[in-house]
Length: 78
Image 1 (tube, one colour):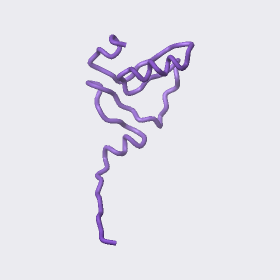
Image 2 (cartoon, one colour; image 1 turned 120 degrees about the vertical axis):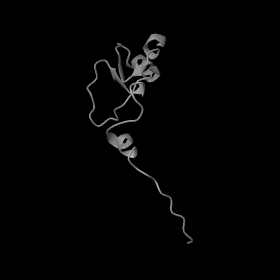
Image 3 (cartoon, one colour; image 1 turned 30 degrees about the vertical axis):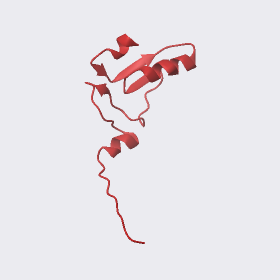
Image 4 (cartoon, helix red, strand yellow; image 1 turned 180 degrees about the vertical axis):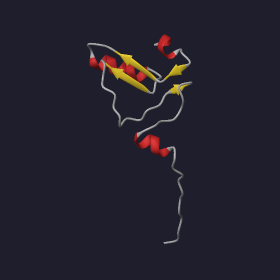
């Protein structure tokens, strides 16, 4: 894990294991924007982006849209 997370980049990674629970535990510890488990298919609807020098922020999905939103709060007397 130290080697995998010790790079300047973190766009994507992969975990292979016969034990699915172990694979998920390891995948959650990787500091990458996307992790494929046992060769999982790329999901076009999932947020896409990286960590560190692979870029912050996300494209696609809800998280990609939020980059372009500006929130406004309205307060009024009822």
